[in-house]
Amino acid sequence: MSARPLAAEFAGSAFLSATVIGSGIAALNLSGGNVALALLANAIATGCILFVIIAVFAPVSGAHFN
Image 1 (cartoon, rainbow, N blue to C red):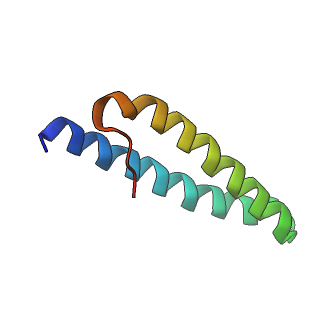
Image 2: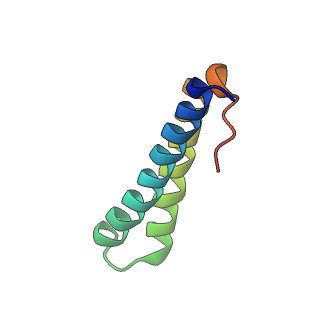
């Protein structure tokens, strides 16, 4: 694997990790103790970022994020 697809996979995985962690923290702080609402917000944020990073990085590396 060349450097460009490897960098794309690394960047995509980093964006995904940051989004999942950040949205989880934000959802817990903003949901007022409602765990279902926090999980819903986290799932929506994760789905949205997955769509974006797959659309952006699929031509470069195939978008196989771990």
